[in-house]
Image (cartoon, rainbow, N blue to C red; front, side, top):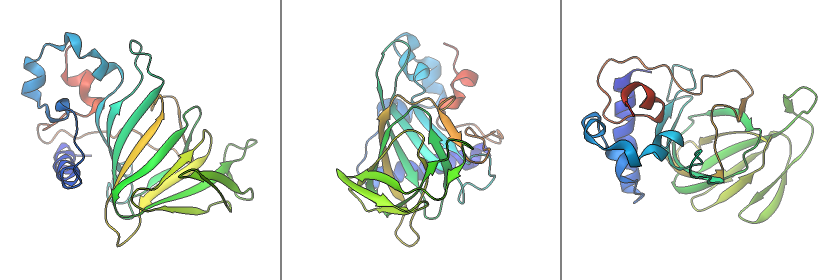
Length: 228
């Protein structure tokens, strides 16, 4: 992805969150000059827990078709010992987050506002580690247990949520003609480096072409731009 594309996505994301009255912590607004002048002694949790902006096209080269905008609000670090994490995400119409599961993480995905969030679900075939296309899926939507055929799709309208246990394959997108979704994630501690299993190989963190200066750093930018 080009940095100019990421910058434009960030500006759009901030405007969308403001429209829906979702407010981010102060460091979400830090620019390069701000990071350079701050005393980072008491901000280590931001870096160690990978808090902050996260924009990816999963290596697809087409963010509008396969991509996701996230901001990690809280997460476990070696010092804080938090067993939980929270993210806010922007999901565009027909913008796919591809099929994947988590080895350890249980998560609730919440539609915080906007359009309808579509989530497709498959059990994992334990022998092949691929999709089990025969076994039904049992999940909980807002405290109600529901059963779907393999590959079934749950439509979450604003205010609704679903609980996804570990090793359950899922992908999601915003339903066409309903608008961008502001999606929340409340989960066990998050580890994007070791806990994600994508059905097809993807690049979780996009390669960035630096065609202009970042307006805000992504969490994956910290090692490059910040000298702790």
